[in-house]
Length: 113
Ligand code: 5GP
Ligand code: ZN
Image 1 (cartoon, protein in one colour):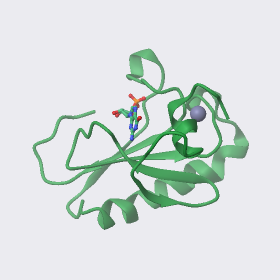
Image 2: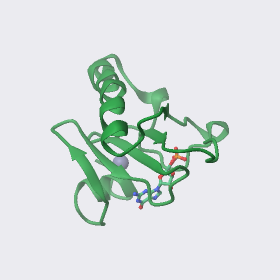
Image 3: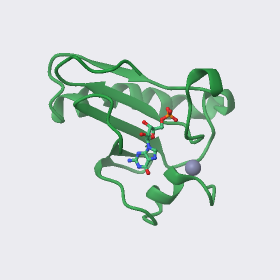
Image 4: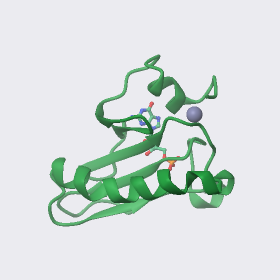
């Protein structure tokens, strides 16, 4: 938990987020500025910055998000393929320093993230 983190605030219900899925480990919301017709953010409940600070104990969580992506992409209408992306650090284009996985899909064209 990090008091100033926008994703922690969404997880705590302090600011709104359009949730499509949640369980004991993570919350999935629609991105507020979608870069594709389907643009989901898979956000762990635990705050850690990015893959640089991920630990061995996050192995199950990281795998779970990869395996959840196809199901949520399909449910949200990305039936013809999708991308699963994590941005890390300044040159990785990371804006929010709470690890998250983008799921992008839907009919092209859409800008690559
Ligand atoms: P990053 O560049 O860190 O990988 O991606 C951060 C993503 O979070 C961006 O795609 C941005 O549009 C999204 N985002 C930033 N603030 C909010 C917010 O308050 N709510 C939601 N749903 N998405 C947000
Ligand atoms: Zn956070």
